[in-house]
Amino acid sequence: MFILAVALVLLVSPGGCSKKEKPHERVVEVTAMKIVPADTPVTFEFVAQTQSSHEVEIRARVNGFLEKRVYTEGGIVKKGAVLFLMDKKPFQTQVNAAAAALARQKASLEVARMNLDRVKPLAEQNALSQKDLDDAKGTFESTSAAVEQAKAQLEMEQLNLSYCTITAPVTGITAAAMIQDGAYVSQANSQLTTVSVLSPMWVNFSVSENDMKRFADRVASGQIIPPKNDDYEVEIVLVDGSIFSEKGRITFAAPSFNPKTGTFLIRSSVKNDKGSLRPNQYVRARMKGAVRRNAILVPQRAVQQGTKGHFVWVVSREGKVEFRPVTVGDWYGDDVFIDNGLLAGDQIVLDGVLSVHQGEPVKIKPAAASTPAGPDAKPAQSSPAVKVETTPAAPATPAAKPAAANAAPSKPAAVPATPAAAKPADSGAAASGKQGR
Image (cartoon, rainbow, N blue to C red; front, side, top):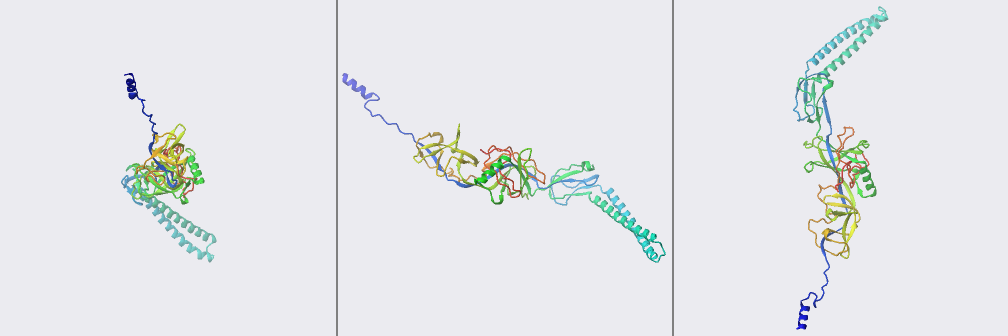
């Protein structure tokens, strides 16, 4: 009985005669992508502000009473269209007086001419003295000058009369009238309204000094290839995210930096025949044309951030994951540029990064169709490579204008090269703004 009891205990005990099982090695399934450097087109985005390419203050050139406003406030007017009418009666009276003065001077000139014609032959015959001849000549020349003066006065009065009809010097959109009908207009309140040309429209933004230098260094190193002749194409993004139908070109770059903001003013010009853009409208300007050479582009979800910076998980040839520190560049849609840390041919983990550990083997499963395959899998065209929030610069004067941008970018990827129009050091990252990272 004792022997049977011992045998029964050994059979039911956990470690009985059973063989000790070897624990299974953990294998995590992940999706991965292979690094393939490729030349990638990049864009530079800025907060910008529109400005009329020709804004004219309509002012009265003569003093008088405003008789009537002819145009419709806020409407489009053609060049030469009548805007205001001033009381013409006082000016017509002055024209009539000047015309009468001219007629009087012409009569005096005719008398002087006939007198000279009579004196001249008599003086030649010594019937009259040389003094009489000189007096006759002086009177004739004096009345001739008086006639010319009267003509000039008449032209001046006629010009003042024409100023009573105030017309639009350009085709554009009108502002509200600043003087009402019946008011007296003088030099103190001579501005009547404003007419702003809508096409072409200027789009102004600014670039910070740091971004200009950073971009110039990237161009010098060959990392960024600017377009030929720095001929950037400017795409306008409206407030609702839609793209404006017309593309613009850079037409002006300020010759110096703004001493108050340390920013560099850039102006682009865009056609606006339909009048969709209005002056002082906030938009986004995207500069296109630059290319980043041999760029390494990876999905943002593959990049992790630790206490010592950014890193990715790289799958070795043995199928094990390794920790790899990287230097992250700028956003490119849903992807991000990697400046340092990865080489061509490296395989990085895309999905499952939270489940892997250093040195552990992983099983690579096919990536979903939506997973990017590297730099060749470019994001939508609406996604900029460099997104800089900049405070739009105040509209510049026609002599040196366009600006617009937000706060200086904390770390923009690049700044576009000098525009062909004025060849600044470069023209890309915004004066004040932040990188899209």
